Amino acid sequence: MENVHRLDDARPVHDVMLALGREARAAAHALGLAPPEQKNRALIGAAAAMRGRVAEIIAANAKDMAAGEAAGMSKANLDRLMLNEARVEAIAKGLEDIAALPDPVGRLLASFDRPNGLKIERVATPLGVIGVIYESRPNVTADAGALCLKAGNAAILRGGSDSFHSSTVIHACLVEGLRAAGLPAAAISLVPVRDRAAVGEMLKGLAGNLDVIVPRGGKSLVARVQDEARVPVFAHLEGIVHVYVDRAADLDMAKSILRNAKLRRTGVCGAAETLLVDRAVAQTHLAPLVSMLIDAGCEVRGDEAACAADARVVPAVEDDWRTEYLDSIISAKIVDGLDAAIAHIETYGSHHTDCIITQDQSAAERFLREVDSAIVLHNASTQFADGGEFGFGAEIGIATGRMHARGPVGLEQLTSFKYRVHGSGQTRP
Image (tube, rainbow, N blue to C red; front, top):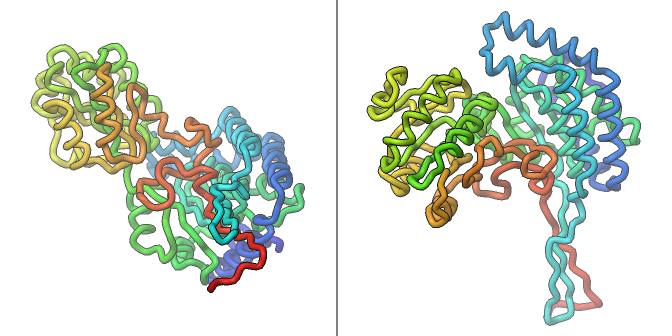
């Protein structure tokens, strides 16, 4: 079925969204039967379309950037929004990388024989129709659409109004690839209206046509989705990410990892937000770590010990330990060893990503075992909390829940399964 919805469609939002849902459901059926080669042709065609329309994408992004600056958007959010030739090329390359990944649909997950001769198989199948609600980052339009397509799912994408022009052109490239491959354009739909009522319609499930929702954005967006959605949600509310410097940590390694974890990109959900330092090495490690951050342009909000270590530290308040800054700000605190670090993370963390820096293997093993986060790291930057870095090709988001998907949500997590039972005439007594 052809997707004919126009930019800023003038019809009532309810009607627009129900039509999107119906069309996506029909497209999902076609995608579920599409061979891997056809889906891959669509992705490679979309990448080629993006490279052929770089100037158009950057021009559209310039409109979004100008509007963002006029609205007082933060530097970090403007960075998330901005596209240049290198970033467009990275998006196009990401589509090709997803095309090169093994197809997750039809995988044999398990096979077993019953005493009565029945042979039972568990096989990976698409989820169906996935709704993605996101803010600022126009690359999500390509990443989410491509991942859903590769996993045999139809996608309904609702980007933020701040990236509306950028996402519209990127989506047009995806549709170009779909058409070239003979797949329905409604396989990847972009909500064509900026009215926030469209989000409410998606949360209601589009008359049963939406199977799961993935929110990617700020705390208020994710909280609303989790509170109001009538369909399952893959999401994380916050990324309150900790780096714990253990008593057996190498200082040079700690400085390198911490700087990258906090400052490589401050606006990503894997960016470190709290530094914990073992009291046993506070005299040797705290001041160099804090000074390194401040000298690099990062504000440090610390406890009494951190304030004593560097006069430039701002005294922390209770809320700082619970804050996802997504900016060049970090909280810092001394803790009484590994037990206290784990307790602090359990109290203030968001079960997203946490790291220990140590040369003590037993301490590392305890941290990795006992910290209940979706991603735990030993001697590595928290900015590796990314589906691409995990080898997934890209991610549709990071989930901190405990059902079905946890951590980076890539191709495998965008499938369900069914049982195939092979018999030879058996009947049940």
